[in-house]
Image 1 (cartoon, chains in turn red, green):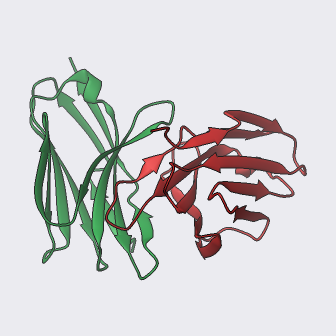
Image 2: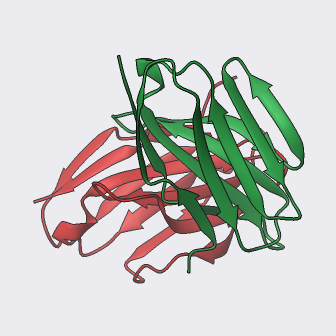
Length: 112
Length: 109
C-alpha cells in the first residue's frame, strides 16, 4: 500500500508570504496529524483532523490553519510567514487509536 | 511538566552495548508508540503497544500500564541504530497523540 505522501518536499518562501503544504494519508486512514519540527527541537503538535473535522490544535497562532478534504487528504496553510516558521513539517495518519502511526517524509519549509 | 517524558535526552554507546531508553507518561492512554527518526527527517514506526512486551529483531519494547512507563531496549547495538527515538502516546477521547522530545542515540564503532 502507498505510504503517507507529502508535497512539496522543499518549499522556499519569503517573509510575509503564504505557504500551502499537502498530505495524502494511507488509504483507509481518516485521521491526519500535522507536526512542526524546528531545527534541534522535538515534534510540536500543530493540528489534528479526523473525518473532515478539526479535532484539536496545538499552541500555534491562528495564521496556522488547515483543512481535510472528503478524500481525507489534508492541507496546511501558513499565512504571513515569519522566519521562525522555517522547519520540517510532518504529516502522519492513523486508522484507529490502536493502529501504528504512519509518517510522511515531510516538507522542509524555509522562510527567508 | 510534559505529558510524555523521555530519558536520557542524549545517549552515546559503543557498538555491541545493550541500550535502554525510557518513557514515562502522566495520562491514561490507549496505546504507546516508539518511533525512529533518522537524520534527514523520515520517521518510522517501530512498535505500537498497549500492554506487555513486543520484540522485533534486536529491538524490544515493554510497557507497564500501572506505572505509566515504557522502555525501548536495543541489544547488540550497531552504528546504524544511531537515530532519534521518540515515544508517543494516544490519549483522550479523540485519540490525541502526544510526543516525547526524543532520545538522540549515537552508537560508536
